[in-house]
Image 1 (tube, rainbow, N blue to C red):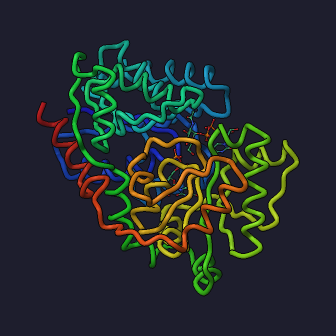
Image 2 (image 1 turned 90 degrees about the vertical axis):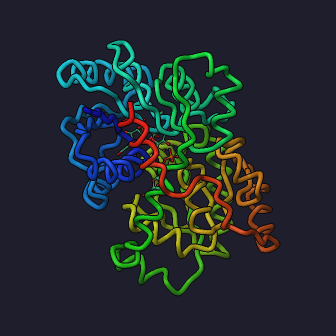
Length: 358
Ligand code: UD1
Ligand code: UDP
């Protein structure tokens, strides 16, 4: 079977690393990787291919830094050409980025089967570009690999059983990655980070979602809250290039020094050793839970609702007071992190077994 994997943004590299490991053990699959180029800085892309042994992309379309329509359109055009040349049996797309939707649309028009990993997730906020990408990708996919029962329920609510698609409860491929790389992080993470942080408690924070970065009021409130927290805690913030650009445009400043985006080994070390996590990242919300850390989510709603329902994470939006009160409330919490909300770390095996059985 020939599998054409389309990826382009940081979270997709981590998901693909988990699935590609299983593919490598299966001689009946030939994987061809297409990198759209959406993320292109060394520490937003190359570092993951190097550290996580993801096979080198056969193609890099080098499409990035464009408005949504132009980016997605040019990606569709590029992927269409590659599909014509490679003639794969299935296209594999991950998550909810513009690269995901472009891969799915190009494949569907050419009659190539689509497998969507992280299907069925919904924030019910159509102002998020990710929500549009998820809904449309799901609707035209042939295989819907759902990380949670809630995701399956969402698809049933949208009558997906009446479409010709296979829904599979696979669990979360990011758990597969977290489990596999956790044991390597102590050794392979950078000495600079470890030496500077090993003695002191710190908050791990990331922020990059469009709804926060492109709204001056929201970004200002988040920056103000982190600046206040930095008076009491060390704040470690690997700064996404999008946020860096917007901070400059809005004339905002941190009163602490953010760091550049880090590779996955450093991220896992930071997750293992931090006090708690403040983030608007989809992936990091779950990873906080995988490493038994409470999360404060800088969003008004999340597709990872189990974390909220079980008290592992709280929604603080971009509200200064709420962010600070969530931090204060953390000392009262006592949760059992052993509950398997996202499967058993074998999601990639389920996905590959399903695809090869057809
Ligand atoms: C994208 C995804 C988002 C995901 C995020 C993961 C969409 C619609 N959004 O958002 O769902 O959570 O990736 O990180 O697909 N930039 C750089 N260097 C890079 C990457 C980006 O400078 O390596 C800059 C771009 O030039 C652009 C900005 O960051 O100005 C935003 O990049 P873009 O890929 O459009 O969206 P993300 O915010 O990264
Ligand atoms: N991540 C990383 N280095 C960083 C920031 C994030 O390795 O500096 C990892 C993080 O651990 C998670 C993934 O990137 O596995 C999440 O990507 P991101 O937050 O960019 O996207 P989202 O999940 O919100 O789509």
